[in-house]
Image 1: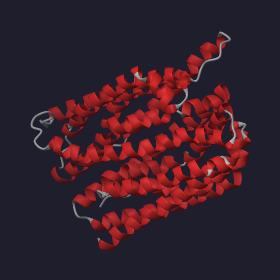
Image 2 (image 1 turned 60 degrees about the horizontal axis):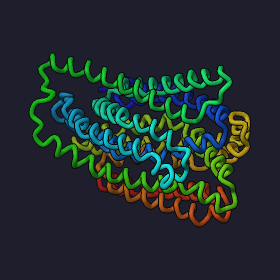
Image 3 (image 1 turned 90 degrees about the horizontal axis):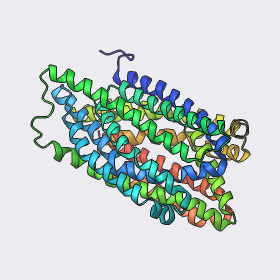
Image 4 (image 1 turned 180 degrees about the vertical axis):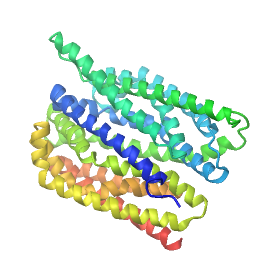
Length: 442
């Protein structure tokens, strides 16, 4: 019987948590550096790019990473021999899609900036950002394979490498500008993002090369015979991609609409972007910081749940679910107390922004459900409940959008915070109800 230390979920979670915490600590100070260098308005401009990035990732990589992870986990449970065929099949679809997306954003940057993001100053940044999409597609598919075989070291190392090179690039380029008494633009941060993806992709490609060489020596067929492989991959990836794409489009409407609705409330363009930048670029990363732990658990729960479900081990699924609810819920409650009690102090001391402190304090109340929802979603994904997850997330996004369009113009940013609290609470309840029905039938 395996000890706790040798259990793949425990070991993998520990690896991902340590590297995740290191990455988030680096990213935390990086956010402070960006906020002080570019100001609240600059952070707002930078955050406006997130919808384009999330939609591109959903279209080209996210569904394939999850499908590869699930397929490889199921194969490992049945044939006991890890194969790279699923990953190469995913790459053969993901890379062409990402290159098309790269070209579309690069040549359509002006149209996207003016008509979709509604901020023409983001066009040059979109062109730089577009080159990160193929790079992200490659290392996402590679990560999916290593998650599937429960070897978290490679994805963890690539995540840390990406963060270090991103921050290093931005710091060096900004220092060069400042040495010449010039003020760098926020586009430097986008350049750092692309450079980080590049080095992460190189590391992932090298890891795959090493793995393929080792498997070839074991006479494991890597490229021969793909019967039914594409069909199995696409049957999982396409629904996931469609779901993620619709969800990210709704999230993009959410992100773009917040500054617009703040203008209706009475803010000018600079103030609206500043408030948006403080919320999404300062307060939210602070709230999501402890998610390094639950996020690590979530990534490794999916293949573990998939494997146990494929083998018919319902008791293992039930035990993993109960422990997840207990420990992640407890962690979320503790974080809520910390953020509510010390949020205002943290916003002022760390970001020099009382508004950030107000946001951190208010959003602290979502922590018990925020951290729990991350892991519950992964469990449901491993059980093949992608359709249920999609419907529940759409419901919660529609709740947030209704608060944005009807509450924000009347009461300002408080309206969005209320919507965030209500939607996260609703999502947690829906996830728990869905899992309760499954566990009762199991």
